[in-house]
Length: 123
Image (cartoon, rainbow, N blue to C red; front, side, top):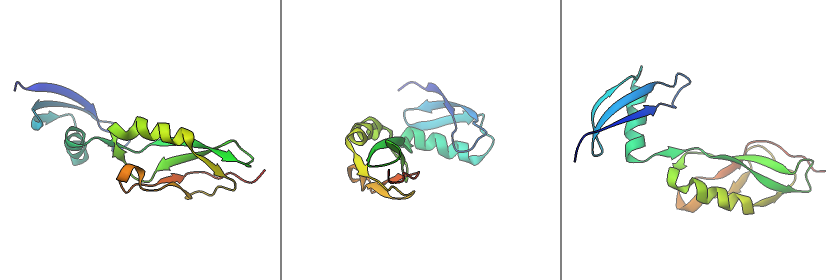
């Protein structure tokens, strides 16, 4: 397999290092541009199993606002993001909503819950 050059922007801190890599399959041949070791870990994780925290909203019945903000308490595999978005469109919860309320449990068997990240009072 020929070597492949790929660029990454590390999202582990606000610095956003632009990391240039040369890969041989899933092995890193060279890596440059990172300021700290978090950049190396970020690239390794992106190659092996890219994950993201998902933020969205769900509908609220009887609330002073129609939607409540939600997020995954931990990152989920990138390949599951659109599937989760589809499921969240179907969710409707009752007011009141408190920050930290569990909206969905164990998303697709990952062990990750979807939590409310804001509050919605009763109308």
